[in-house]
Length: 281
Length: 288
Image 1 (cartoon, rainbow over the protein chains, first blue to last red):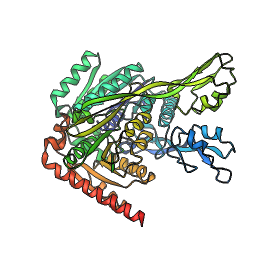
Image 2 (image 1 turned 180 degrees about the horizontal axis):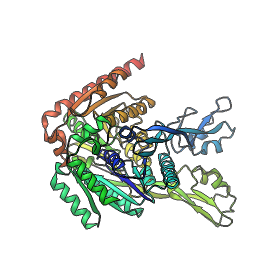
Image 3 (image 1 turned 60 degrees about the vertical axis):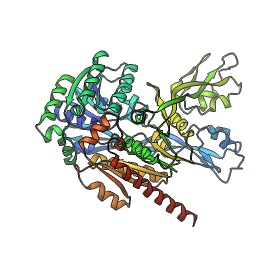
Image 4 (image 1 turned 45 degrees about the horizontal axis):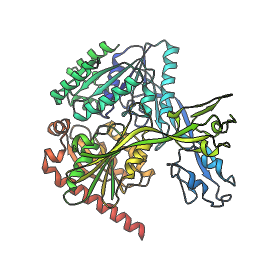
């Protein structure tokens, strides 16, 4: 079984459109949407939900006003400035519980928080594991880990060859959680100076965690000079270019129709993604 | 006045809006641009600021003096993040899991734990054409962006106009970046992805009780559902930027929209005036 995670560093380079297309091209796979903050893959795959689970994670402090003597110790010690006027700001609280341990009158209790949902759905391309992190919640890395673990379990049970996952942007906690231990990272970039800068950092993360990477230059013809610079940099680091996708409004039109681009058009974009899948698999 | 520029979905044009808004205002106001997308900061690519200072951002993690330690296990018991474990005659720490809450060092009965700093990134500051600029960079391989974002925001001068470029998404780094703002601009694009993530971003800013308005970027190629959504939710569309291959090319070369097409400057000044009006009205009505 091979796990391919699609990342980008910079947001909006085309990760989800590419994962949607790989979903349509690959046989015997499970799909995973690891962008639990702002999941979009379901908008291309029209899933029907089979299993819904609550995601309980982390804690939040609560101060019992009747017991509180307003001594102020909790406020003074909280490193996250989450206690003001003897009340807890649940958004700032990181759930460390320090306040509950030091309160001299035991007025502070900690409770678990419901921080989102995760789902297993059927799509016409195969099973999809996806999630929704609650608004302004923490622990997105933990929810990503659950999504991957479920996807892996499904792949093992059903003897599937691939896990294809749509990763989050950036290089922090949920990206590390999506990447560590995966078989291959496909990094989707664009030929802008921002794209080049962000690719370098996400490649650094792949290197740090020892995950082999390949690069896809999306909209490569928007700036061919920058595209060449990306190719040269990849070459010098021994990173293979898996695909060069031309800019075409047809990609946006496919998103509006809610279908993977490879099922919407037979043009150059589709041909290039097909070629890329042949290299990746 | 603090205005944050957020989006939910990545790549919708936050950096374009934040940099062009900043430059459009710099003739008439003292403006500060804070790039809080510390995982992938890009504003410096466009502003090309002259950097004048930098500072490492440490988080405080436990250091255990085993000569004093009695292996009582209290530290491990109070740590909510499993960042410290006590064996029969040894203490293990996992600095990357530590949030720096200080519970272990404060509650250790033997005072055997002191806090040591561990660098997780850096902030840098400088200026560009009269604009004061600050950004943060999370070190590659590190997970926690919020402490760096906090440090960037420490340098905000609220007497000035402060523009904050926010990371994509809706979770803790986004909340850390936008909290305390007077207004939040949400940049989106007219596709189902843009709409889905805009709705999540709206929920996030409403949770924090920050007023928001939309900048619709790459208008023309997608659908009309963003307009319908904004009407229904009573969210103003402050500015519309069309899909234009020339704008994309300027962006790809690291040139801001208002530098490449100066005619856009007046639109960004109008955008700011609209926001000022909304914020003033809101503060008046809350005083009443």
